[in-house]
Amino acid sequence: MDDFIFKAVERVIRAMQDNLGEPITIDDMARTAMFSKFHFSRMFQRVTGISPGRFLSALRLQEAKRLLLTSSLTVADISHLVGYNSIGTFSSRFRMSVGVSPTSYRQFGGYVAPLDEPLPAGWPGHGEHPVVRGHVHHPAECRPGHIVVGLFPDRIAQGIPVRHTTLPASGEFVLADVPDGTWHVLARTMDVANGTPDGARGEVYVGALGPIPVAAGKPVRPIDVWLRPRLIFDPPALLAQLDETMWADRARVPGGAEEAALPGA
Image (tube, rainbow, N blue to C red; front, side):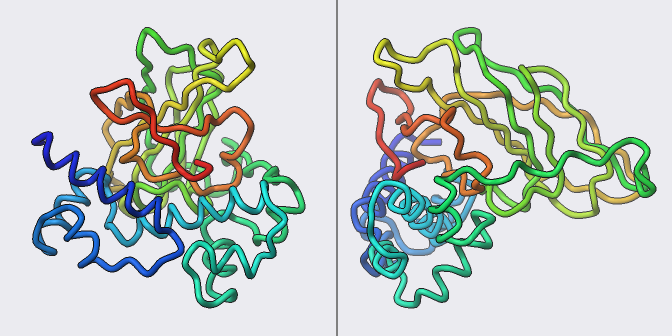
């Protein structure tokens, strides 16, 4: 894909980050990208994997998470600051995406109950649906900590994954009894070897593959998921269980040393 397309999408994402509390229309984004509205929407989805509107919504909710943990602002004030006119709509979308209410997220400091364990082999319904299996790989320069692998409806890690597993390191994963549907495999970890001398956390690595169609009676071919440093084009992970202190607060712009902060991502 041409470099000018990535630069155009990057301009739009930075404009989103700088104006989360303001109304931002698809026409505004297209003007920032300097493309027609139709071409911009297709281009943005090709680069990020999701629509511009969904990416903006994810950034707003991620900023809300940051403000809940780092400020004394009320939930109503935070909802307004990140572009919601209705606190009810904000709270509903926050709970649906993050997994808990804004008040609970703040109360527990971002730490919530871990995801349920995967279905045990002896579970009565086990084996009735296909298995998604594969291998997670990482670059030689990365030493990953534990790796969360989940199946989600699209490229955003939000809501409860339909299936998930946690690996102690890179290697094979098995997601059993996957329901029929079209899913995305999302993987996330942190480089535990490359923190800074002042104790800052290491770099976040992500991997994504999909869409993967799953249907009963049809085996799914094994897949390979390659971890790489998280980029500014990767949607933030909204699921609260991914907000442990192991996740870094930065995203890298491809092709350069610059690192661009995403709001609390």
